[in-house]
Length: 351
View: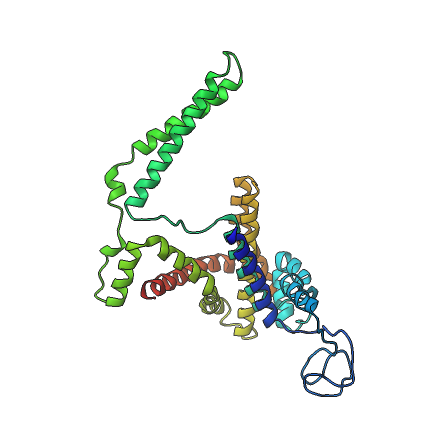
């Protein structure tokens, strides 16, 4: 139960952090004579000098009001941003770059909110590194447990089958379960023990660099802890994907001087935010039992289609040009993710 509370806390934290970096445009609630923050005479619902609202809350309920706004509302911007992000991401990118910003959640705020929420959802549905990994021994224990489960499944199916009379159509269903369980047992028994006990050990690597070799040794002694640290690093350092991606996106348009690094950064940040939200949807769909075929199809088709649409709309590309750049960008993404994971592994070994 504590995991669910921690996950809820992550969602709240993500919303509040996103809210902290989100401009407070168009959020006044009243007027007064002087700004309570800087003392400037007010001529509208917000101070034209420091931006503070003329109407300020001073009640316990206001704290809950701020949390709800931070998590769910973004003052209504979230619900104007998400439809465009999903269907017309390039238009959202272009409109934000060109200065239409008060209507939409900023790229960084949406990025922070989506990343926090994604890892919170992963925690809720139980997508976490296993806590009992141990090279060799852990693998053997896992195989033994799988075999034990298969034996129990076979025994339950045999008992249920024997309770049915001959000719009962339900006997065939139990016969099928028995056959499948026996096939699983045979496959597990066929795994050579040498292949399990002689699993590759990370500590076989010796670089001569003490800090790195010591980290490799720790990884081998407690791989489950190291995997947990790696997951935490992905969570904490996901922002690294933005600067890592920037040079690659720039290469796609380096000869088009009308597009600046800021434009590419907005493009990248909105794109990563969408992919995080997509992972959330796919994870929840899998948790509620949506067929695996649909989930696999969405995982394979939606990202390139979304990337194509965002490139075409944000940079005013012709379809053929957008397709070519999408193909190149998908190749770039594999490089970016590889660099990112390498950095995290090295940080984990040295940390």
